[in-house]
Length: 233
Image 1 (cartoon, rainbow, N blue to C red):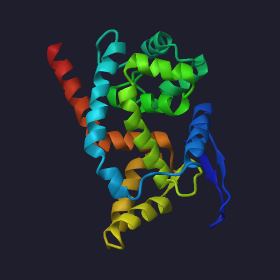
Image 2 (spheres, helix red, strand yellow):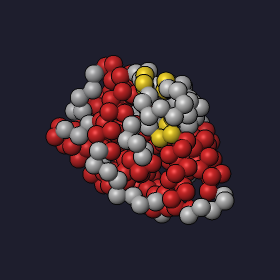
Image 3 (cartoon, rainbow, N blue to C red):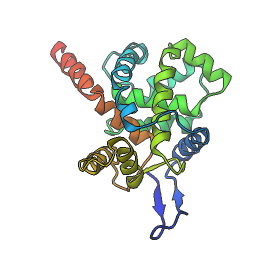
Image 4 (tube, rainbow, N blue to C red):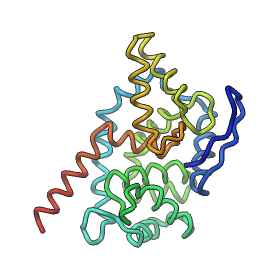
């Protein structure tokens, strides 16, 4: 993740991205944030969990389309084939960056929960007409609403529209919902720690997405599929 440089409560911070992909991701989120969020509270995000979970699980058929050897992971060559088939224009460097960004276990394979995050990042980064056609080929139009909900939820949390969510922004979002309940600060801190897995005090959209897949139970689904695959061997 990128670093944040600043002193005290200074509103100006110099953010240094670690990859071109991260820079593009933050820039794309800042553009989305300029239009504001339809979300009114963190509760409105939580209420959408069941529909988001259902939509995520529909991604399984898309995942299986591109898992050529049916080993429950998509390797870099399969991902490259996926983009080529869909005619989504990514450079080799961008494909490598996407793969490395989503392969959080560094096991050279994209698992189902990681694939969902990858699809959502593609949705965020590619909104040109060619990409829209590619999404239609893949059956992604039905997922557009879900991905837009996730973008909107992140924009709601990102109060200062800098493309990241800070600890204080998370606390503010929870407090708006909880109306001063004593436990709200603890809830906010727990949720933030679940998102900020590199512990740099700032959450980007990718970290937010991985936390979301855990919150709606996609990790457990992934583990069940792996167990079933192991039993078949």
